Length: 184
Image (tube, rainbow, N blue to C red):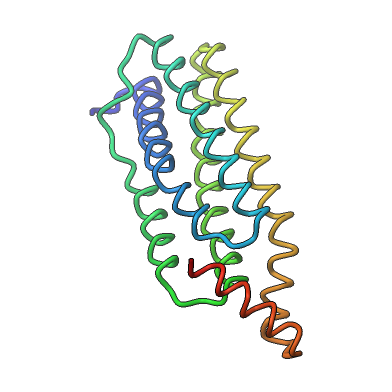
C-alpha cells in the first residue's frame, strides 16, 4: 500500500491493529492457561472478552469507512506473542512465570495503547468522529487492562521475590503445591 496521505496511513494502521487483535485472540487463552494465580487467569479471560469487543468495534470503524479490514500482518504483535510463547516454555517457578506473563502482557498493552492513540488522533484530524469515539473506547479499555495488570503484579511480584528470599517449610510446601497444580 502506498501511503500518500494521512488517510492512507490511518487505514494502514487500522489494518495493522485489526490483525494484531486477531493474533491476540489466539494468544490470550494460552496465557490464561499458563497463569497459576487465579486473579491473573481471570484478567486474561476478561481481556479476551474485551478483545472480541474491540475487534467488533474495529469492524464498525471499517464499515463506516466502507473498507475491508483485511490485508495487513502485524509483525510487531507477532513478535510480542512469539516472545511470550517462548517464555511460557521456560521451566520457571509458578510465581515467577506469572510475573513474566504480566510483563509480556503489559508489553502488548503498551503496544496497543500506542497504536490506538495514534489512529484515534488520525481519526480526529480527518474528521472521522464516529471512528475516533470507537477507537477512544478501545484505548480506554487497553489503559484499564494495563492498570489492572499493574495491580495484580504488586502481589505476584512480591510472591515471586518471596520465593527467592523465603525458604520456610510452609512456603516451600505452598510452592510445591502450586507447582503440582501448574503441571496438571
